[in-house]
Each structure stands twice: as C-alpha cells, then as structure tokens.
Length: 158
Image (tube, rainbow, N blue to C red; front, top):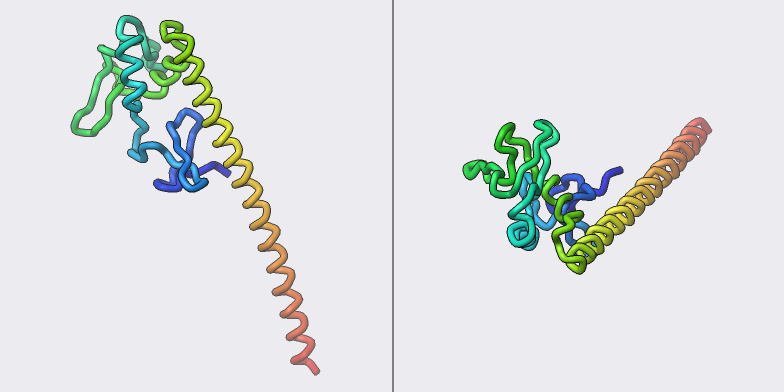
C-alpha cells in the first residue's frame, strides 16, 4: 500500500517535497508536477549555475540550469531542451550530491531528505498496519454475519 498525499490523494514518492500537517503527510505543492522549491532554485542559481545540474535519461545528455527548457503555458519548468522530459527529479538529486555546495548546506539537505524518507517509511508502515487491521475487522465481521445467518436459519426452522 502506497502512502498517499492527504491533499491530492496522489502517491508520495521519496523524491517528493513533503510536509507534515496534523500528523498527515502532504506534498508541499500538490500541483500535477512537483517543481523545485524557492530554496532549491536559489541553491541551484548560486552554486550550480556554472556546471551541469541535470541529466536527461531519455537523451543521455547533461545540462546546466541555464539550458533548461520551459513550458510557460503548461506551467512546467526544468524540461530537457531536446525531448521536453521533466528534469526536476534529476536536478533535485544533483542538489543533494553536488560537491560545489558548502558541506553544511549539503549535510542539512541530506538530513531533510533522510527525515522525509523516515516519515514516508513510517507512514507506509502505519498504512500497512491499518490495512491489516481493516482486513482482520472485515474477516471478523464476515464471521459474525455468518454466525447470525446460521442462528436465524435455525430459529426459523423451529
């Protein structure tokens, strides 16, 4: 069972930017595509503007941020200029591993990502546990309904 966003009901992936609100995980931005946060854009501009920051798996090409394409009418950014594939996940992965970023920033970013992964894993475990409890309750209800039917059938025969 996949952990779902409490706002948009889409699955939450490990690479998604999330927040916890009243004990429930949600995407930070429930738009159809998860764009970069303002903080991620600043880091990209300040520290990664002079080197490749994304790799398009489809084209097997790498791009610096200034070469990313955009679709202003569709509201999408960080696209491969060649095939228009969304590069957001690749850019985000680069930010978590870029050696140009100061160690403190990279360490804090890794801590945030690790905390998000723990939250997602914990939510997944809770969702799995609740699924098991629901199945057990359904089985128990079915047994009780069967017992009631048997008792009613015996009573109507006498």
